[in-house]
Amino acid sequence: MDHTQLKLSEEKVFKDPVHRYVHVRDKIIWSLIGTKEFQRLRRIKQLGTTYLTFHGAEHSRFNHSLGVYEIVRRIVDDVFEGRPEWNEQERLLSLCAALLHDLGHGPFSHSFEKVYHTDHELFTRKIILGNTEVNEVLRQVSLDFPQKVADVIGKTYPDKLVVSLISSQIDADRMDYLQRDAYFTGVSYGHFDMERILRVMRPREDQVVFKSTGMHAVEDYIMSRYQMYWQVYFHPVTRSAEVILTKILQRAKALYESSYHFKYQPLHFISLFEENVTLEDYLKLDEPVILYYFQMWEEEEDNILSDLCYRFMNRNLLKYVEFDPANQYKLLGTLEELFHKAEIDPDYYLAVDSSSDLPYDFYRPGEEEERLPIHLSMSDGELHELSRESTIVEAISGKRRTDHKLYYPEDLLTDYSKHAEIKQQIMSILKKD
Image (cartoon, rainbow, N blue to C red; front, side, top):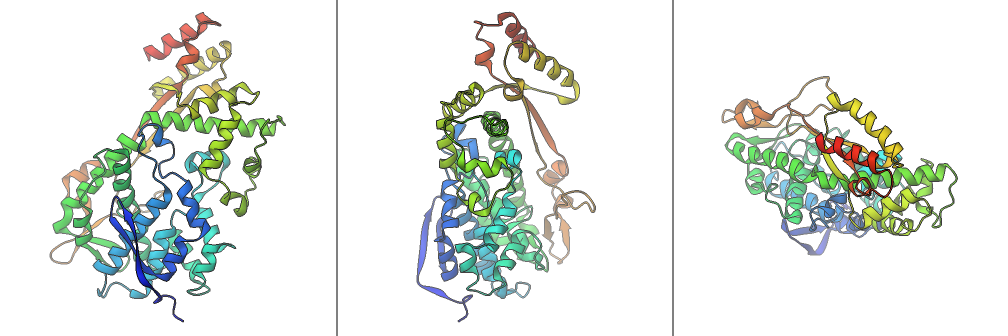
């Protein structure tokens, strides 16, 4: 039986606030959605701690994954169908890779990865290739099909056109999360004319290109991405919550390594602490599990862990000031000394957080993280790199913007019951700079 052609007897649809409907006709896709590994994504927020800044940002990786699948489905079934440059044999592979591209994300994944040295892309491939329900479904297509899906997600699959659908400077992944995150945060920045972009997409040998008549829609997309990063993803209040989250994870690990006796044993964390996480352990981790521990740890004897967990659970976040690491590194040393004198541990209560984004870049051979450029197909069939035709994109091409903030606990520093003079000195430094 050819599972690539196997259809459901009746089309299934998911009502979706961004795409109106997500359509499923392929039996393999429907089976993948029903696996426990994919259902786990319902319990992992798409935007991590952003819900503490934008209260509507409660949507999940599950929502987003369905959205990416739906965009790719529209591309391969509507835009590319019948075009000689597109290989119809890659259709189901493209749909599966789109659906499963975020399968390995952990709870609050970026903070977890930073502290515990995990890699969501590696775990995505492990889930696809391991002893899982997802692997069992994919093997119904062919024994090598799981490896093909993993290769597309890992960007090593030979057909670069397939890879570019979910991994390029304008792909289904970005087109979904910009619109979805804008919808759930309630901002207007992430909206762009996706319908127009889809209409002007064209398959080429190894990438998607765009008819030059649609250049302004592509410009709009790039500016939407730029605005979303600085107004939503890098919002300083969200970053404050990320700092606290990271410090909780660091403190819990440090306590475990010092043989601290937890009131509530961190059973789900032990393999993380020991940096020996099995796939089985990893799949048991989701955000409700993590938040349960944080709530329990509010009652721990360790004052730092208890306080940090209370702050995170009750949104008592750190304040911030602008920070210039190039010119203020000595200041940071001074503040650390004063924090110690005030009996506030600077390792957990003083932090510099940096955000950096490159909104668009053109191909620079040999550079780290080479980015394939966005190409416009001109009326004569020639391809022109986008920034050659767009003055707007040219103005931001290759320009990395970086922002640094210094975070501190204002409530502790304005409690003058102990070390009043030192704390006043710290506050005067922070407020001056």
